[in-house]
Amino acid sequence: MKQSRRKFIQSTGAAVGALTLPKLVPQATAASSAKKHNILYLCSDQQHWQAMGSVDPFFDTPHQDALAAESTVFENAFCTTPQCSPSRSSMLTGYYPHKTEMMNNSGASGGTDLKLPTVGSHLQEAGYTTALFGKWHLGDNSIGNAGWSEETKKGPDPKTTERGIDFLDRHADDEKPFALFLMYLDPHDIYHYKPGKSDVRTDDVVLGESWKKQDFDSVPKIHREFMEINQGEFIVNADEETWKGYRDYYRQKVKLYDDHVGRVVEKLKDLGLFENTIIVNTSDHGDMDTFHRLVFKGPFMYEHMMRIPLSVRMPGNPIHRKSDYNWVNVDTTPTLLELAGAKAPKCHGLSAASIIKGTGPVPEREYVIGQYYGKQTWVNPIRSIRGNGWKYNLYTDWGEELYHLDQDPEEIENLANDPKHAGMKRKLKKRLDRWIKENDDPFYSFTTTSLDPGEAKTILKNPL
Image 1 (cartoon, rainbow, N blue to C red):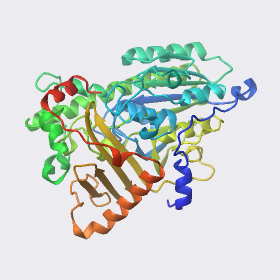
Image 2: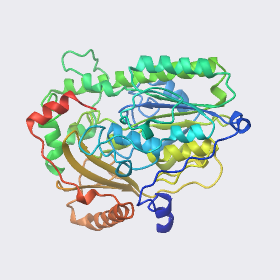
Image 3: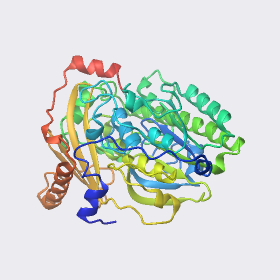
Image 4: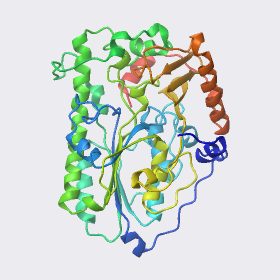
């Protein structure tokens, strides 16, 4: 899907160089509210796009698979950045992290508290009773925290499900529609994996081609640093069985999240709400899951970091539809607001409501832009552009990566220094630089910092 430069500038919010607080839509009337669909937003933490049984049978996710079978499934869905706070700031506001000012996790270098109105505020103004239970991780600024009729912005996951089910029980007969956001912690608890101590089974675990062929000398050196003196230290020199154990432990954590999805959806059905509720299932970012001999998340932009699951079940149209639209999670706010019959603020996101409803013009996004700032005080800024079968990653100090995704979907061969592909690299960098300029992205002003062993220990204790 192509688009003109003018349309790209307009649709990505390039005109919002001077960031202003978006105006909220007028209060909806009670009559119009009663006709609107409810919204259930289910979000896991650190689940890559392949971590679903419907995509990879290695994973056991019957409840998410059942939803996907009756939903629009976005096969090319991406986060703005593979970090919790900045990604969540994007999905809840419609802006990239450099505009939300949450380029890193709340409290970390480059991170702050969210100071913009969220989709919760907009939905309230559109006549919805809103609730958010579970992980927040966006600070305590009063503007950013507003918009929730009910809230408990912490876990653990079983409590999040209990609170969600209680909310549904209490609001099942309301005339006003509700928007319930359940933000789970799993499979983020992969950080609890302890080789030789965690209960795992590895008889059916297969390690990917990129695990076997990873060449750290061909990629920016911070990939190796992450594994040797940072969070990967516990496994970098381990045997194959230990790596397989990581994959099984991750699979278990994905299954725990899926169990919660099942409980909540079953409650919707028991209350007769299922056929009048829009159900979104997604995640904030991915996990390396042993691919490229990497674990967790860090300063890299591989598919397992950036691609996320996303399905949207629309009442009255419960059919399985696959879309190759390049969804970025800044699209969440405008899409939900259009589905709710409300007007979205101007932002970086596009509304994909027409794809979900199966009617109207389809939005166009030729390239996906990804951002990365750092981890705690370890700053390693990266920008990524992905489209037309290629991906180009630019680091402030550590070089470049170029992958031909059509021919090398596991991103094994870095072509950045191959003269045969110099033209493609120039083209992608030029397009990336245009986006950076048009959107006032301060990428080129950032300063990289080094990581010392003492800092590494601090990061290991605070993996968020």
